[in-house]
Amino acid sequence: MPQYDFRCKACGQRFSVRYKSYAHYDAATPRCPACEASDLARLITAVAIPRSGRDYAKMSSGEMLSVLESGDGRQVDDMFKQVRGRDEADDGPAPSETPS
Picture 1 (cartoon, rainbow, N blue to C red):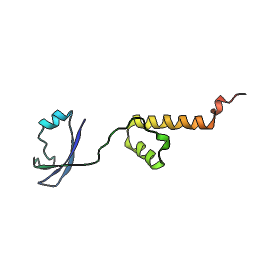
Picture 2: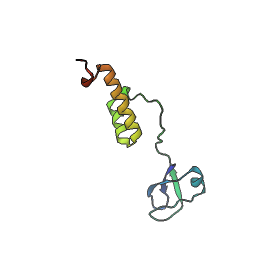
Picture 3: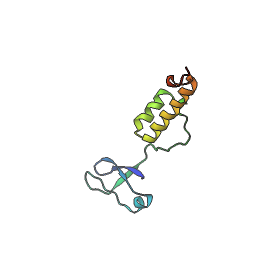
Picture 4: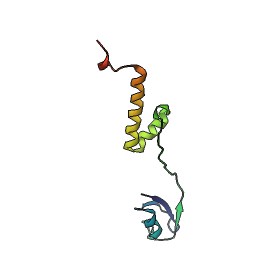
């Protein structure tokens, strides 16, 4: 779902609006939630673009923290699986798999 950020030219209120599709955005006339004005300035903010094939194990601790704080469960799960898989491969078999 596309999300757009606006600032009301009448009262200065900043707000975001999500639309079901780009067609819904094109057809909409957003209004300020504070004063109902339609004279708005669209703001350009950070854009999140999903990456495929990220190598989480090569990330710094700060980058890993950003993944955790993003709230994206799929990315967090992928990161844990990838990092854990590398740790196990580098450290040899897990203690429960040690031959007797």
